[in-house]
Length: 45
Image (spheres, one colour):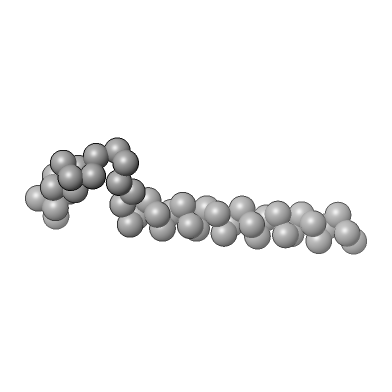
């Protein structure tokens, strides 16, 4: 695991997004969308 982490840092640097970061970003975006939809439902009622 440690060897892979070192390699990815050298290759990608700051510009490359890891799968874990992408997954967290996706989950955050979905939660945000759900929150907005719930808010719209409350306003309409």
